[in-house]
Image (tube, rainbow, N blue to C red; front, top):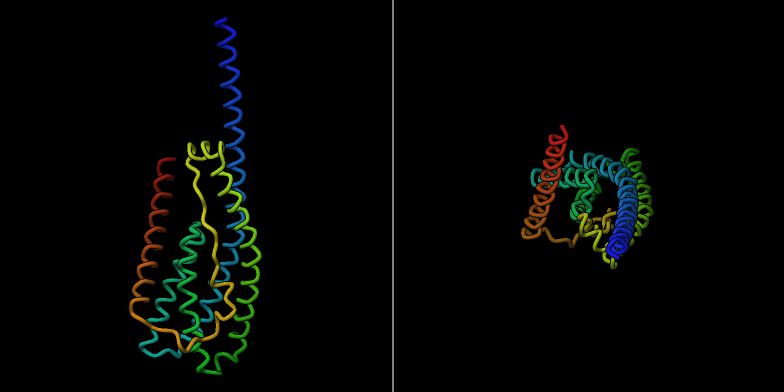
Length: 228
């Protein structure tokens, strides 16, 4: 009788183990799908950040002393966005994109004060590149957010959520991409406020992004050191 009970316990434990293994493998596959979808976005984002930088550089030479701070801030935000994108920090990208959405119309306004810039072949080419990149990002964003949605649902469903909790799997952020979907992104807004409080808030958000990126890089170096 004891032997039969022991065999039953062992069989039940084996079934539980196989189920956990199956769920874990499914989670790994779904997480890899999310990472691959983000990598596809990251490639285009990096191209777009280069194009935005080219656009800013074409206008920067006409900026006065006060406006120079605008271009310095843009350079910092662009770098933070690029680093966040390459490290898979979607929240950081969302924050940086939001800040760029506020900065780019001001930069474009400076360029539009000088028709020799906006009518130039290089400037027009960059605008076309950005439009094309925005379309590609929008398409890939839909695929990425769909996979994130499936992931966030599966790790909350019972009993899969127990396995996800045990192995430390958490919800992932959606890619908002407000900066790539705004049709008025490159239209200067004459009524936009330059309030000091907003600038301070943006600086705080940027510092937070840079800090998070630094922590991720430090953790990566620590893991590499442990493997050695």
